[in-house]
Amino acid sequence: MGMTLDGIRHWVFDMDGTLTLPVHDFPAIKRKLGIPQDDDILGHLAALPAQESAAKHAWLLEHERELALASQPADGAVELVRELSARGYRLGILTRNAQELAYITLQAIGLADCFAAEDVLGRDEATPKPDPAGLLKLATRWNVKPEQMVMIGDYMHDLNCGRAAGARTVLVNLKDNPWPELTDWHAVDCTALRGMLG
Figure 1: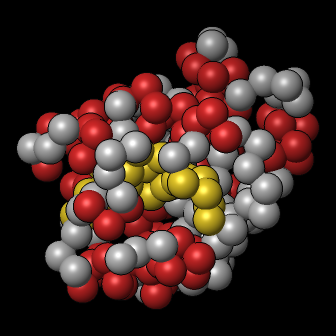
Figure 2 (figure 1 turned 180 degrees about the vertical axis):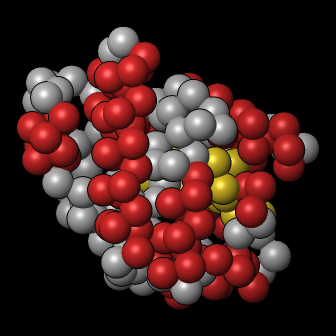
């Protein structure tokens, strides 16, 4: 691999299920919005007629706002992010949620001061993951090559996004790794990931 986690000073996190305990009931959201269970929510809404899409996006935003306000940090997430921040690392958020709700979530879990506001990208700031656009946007802003960054997430979208951008990838908060071909490092939780720092 040629690089240890220790050598990477630019970290980009997914939000839900990565820094927070997962609370989204995606099957229920899909039922409520009339989306087939196998479809991607954002992809499905994007393909709808404008008026219907806008109405369903509005419902989704309101539902997500309630969840954001009640966010709880994932095990070890606060300690990990604080440690990285104390080391002077650049930290970003790349979420398929809305940016304003990412801010609310960071406030709720007590980590808002560790992220520059412009380094928190939601679904409207860049094409949503698995597209690498958000990661590449941060790479440009931070003036680093993607391979000097690591994308941390709990799902295939995060890993595919990292791979497509040319960044390193960490799968976190899953006991087993279903996507080894997409993963550079695997940690069962953020506490274990913190233990992997040199």
